Image 1 (spheres, rainbow, N blue to C red):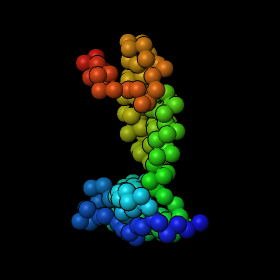
Image 2: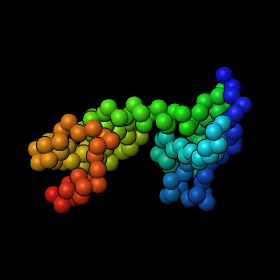
Image 3: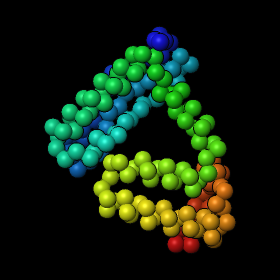
Length: 152
């Protein structure tokens, strides 16, 4: 379903000057019917590839998929709002587990182990020290973050 009230630019690859040591991404601008304009960036597993050619090939596929979705009427702004709304009822501990499982698919085993250890340390602090094992994502605040850093 195509909606002509939405305008977008064709997705493009940002190669950061061709430097594969930097994070590449595919980006586009999207303007909703209400006039909200925002840049969206997508990386997915793009930066796991070691050569320019591989990254360019993967980015080409990403660009095609994103462009097709945009042409069919997909709104990344609405998608973002719905995702945020869904996260309102997620416990912080569950969100950390979900993020870790997502990252596992595109990071090295060593990086996964590092993330796993750091998240488990934080989860232990949440449950044992702060007694906040039922804290929802939206209720985690700067003071609690500072308390955790002081604990470390």
